[in-house]
Length: 126
Image (cartoon, rainbow, N blue to C red; front, side, top):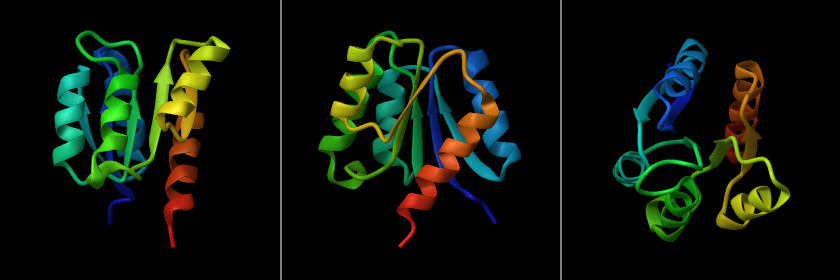
């Protein structure tokens, strides 16, 4: 039985693969996207339990993707964890204001990421 479906969106393939491996090993079904537009399209078309989203990506930023996910009825409440190198206070504020449930900065601990993903999903349970 799967722990849930997670979409990982990051333009750095190594980070995408690392996150996907950690989550897959923990029993999650993982889909990857390597840019904001693909991530948005997958996010809107898939039935994901959670999205792990980079902020700085070519074409469409993670903040723009997050705002579009929040605007769409089918993804308005899907939990989103922002995973980013942007560490300034205003960046964190912008992420939460756009609708992020968690904000993690790179470099990150894959173990901590897994703990946060599980905690976010546990909060969704009825």
